[in-house]
Image (cartoon, rainbow, N blue to C red; front, side, top):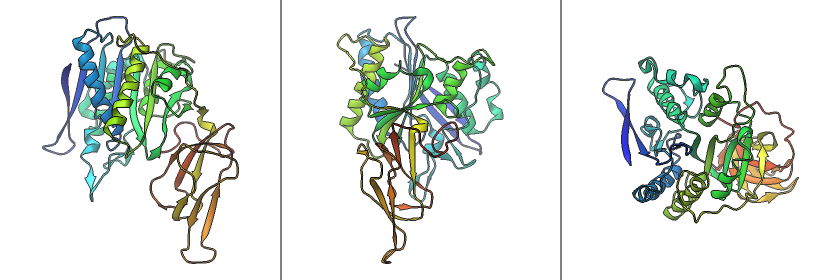
Length: 353
């Protein structure tokens, strides 16, 4: 394993961020190149724990000559966000200087212009320099895996239609509960990577990208950081790498993925009609029927008419749930992956900021 550091000068005097990058050299030139990063949202640490145990396995494989692909691992992809601790809480999702989500506003370019990403970096803020360095590394790979987590959730992934159903092997290897099929219409990291591939010839969009993959994996919830869970997830990602020919492991066989693969238009975003204390009646991973009582919101404690009930608009699987129990008006409560398109209108791209 070769370790390098990318130094990102801060936007104020005397500050610099260091981004460790781990490289494993493959022995097979035509094997797919791999890029894996974790904690782009700096407080989302299940992926960092997975990367720790995966690298342990990769070092062993390297010693045995079983690493076939060039593999790049960035275990904690956001040192800028990791330093944003305020009032006892890490604020790693948004850049406090610009209020921009660290997983938005990645450059949308053609893959042939990859070299432009790291030219004249001094013109950009620290957060933008970080983003340009990350996507530059990713565009040197064929398989790109961005490890995130949700608030409270089952294990699922956002996968562009262009990679499905070929990417079902990743869902099977990690034993995912669901896949949300996206339309690739945002500036999030994984969609910026797929954009660059789709428009490698500017102005000509490729509908499918065989042999490529750019995916956001949601490794359950923010508090799901445990040694055995991380080891199991690392083993799942190892199985995927073996199935794709990135590492040699003849013992690996993958079952078929049997979970739901749901277009984003079929995801019901359940929101609070009013502010108050939320009482959930169903947990993540449960299937609900149309009309089921999902939550009760106490809007006026102690009053005879002080509650509002929230019901399921249609049947589906509860994929995520908010951990906060004091909710704001129109605040997110749940995502439900459903069989039919939602009646609610959705803008192209990601479901939330």
